[in-house]
Image (cartoon, rainbow, N blue to C red):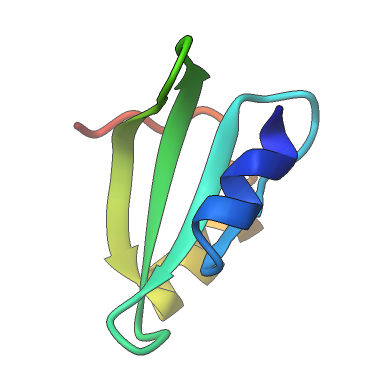
Length: 72
């Protein structure tokens, strides 16, 4: 369940809009990482979609691209 992602990684938030994406605060909250998640039988699989600074993430959200970007 998505709540298990939050419980496992306390620096993660779900992006919402019924996506399977999470945003992670990394580097002392200076950077953001967007990942797609999939639940296996015993593990949560994370696939990196984007990494950038907090400021770049804010601009990404202003363009509503956080739900679709896949740079990696």
